[in-house]
Image (tube, rainbow, N blue to C red; front, side, top):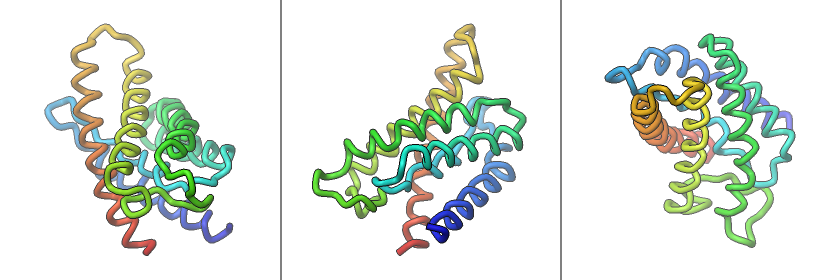
Length: 169
């Protein structure tokens, strides 16, 4: 339990540092902003208690808010994504899966992991940009920012999974 918490804390710090030092400075064409810190929520195992993942998601989002000066946007988006993650994971895993199944390419299969990652990053990115815009005044700019940022975030999460899997196998 303690080792798992320390590993999660390590990955949260790494993702926050990479977000803060690298990805916060990327704004391709004025629209694309990668937000791969959402990857933090993807590898939580099937049997993780709901309060646990909600707390981790909230803290990670809050730390992003503090470092990027986006009051509440990261915390709200990560908390909603953390709330949906166990539900979506339950839909993606086989019926006979064990409680400690960690979602990944090898455990879910490429197709299921692809959908799982796509849907969670889609929810996170949509929530993030909807709260950030807080209006639909510039709807076309919002849709372009959302779609392009989701695409890059999704791709980065798939790449991060490769590194995460190598580290834990």
